[in-house]
Image (cartoon, rainbow, N blue to C red; front, side, top):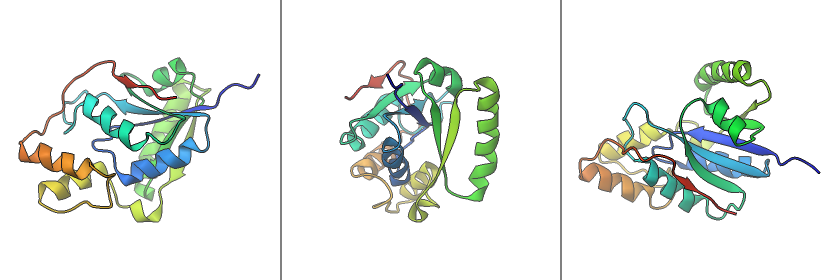
Length: 178
């Protein structure tokens, strides 16, 4: 019996962008199961709370049967081991991303030698895109149409209009599919 190939794509997803969605779609084609893991905001700097992030991610990945959305806290490698993941997916936009991601991959390998890091280059059209840039553009009144999945821009504008800049701390939230 062949073991399921499980990978984890971790991130803050604050908010999810089309760059994230591109990596999710491509990684889900490579693995039997892809866990999109929303990292706990231990600094309290997120615009969206964990529940909101799970909802947005669940909505935009609903058509991907092998994708599961979860929250996690603590060391990523401990979470990956617990979920029996064989790989951690990391998206790379530019050379500047590589240095940090390479250091993290080496540390993760030191902590948990059986888990591999798989780097995926983003599509060129998303090479400049980040959640931080998206939030900044919306905060300053610009449009992020085509840069975020449908409905995300509206949620961003509603949050900013209400003056809500800090996420909430909801624990142990999961959306299971499939």
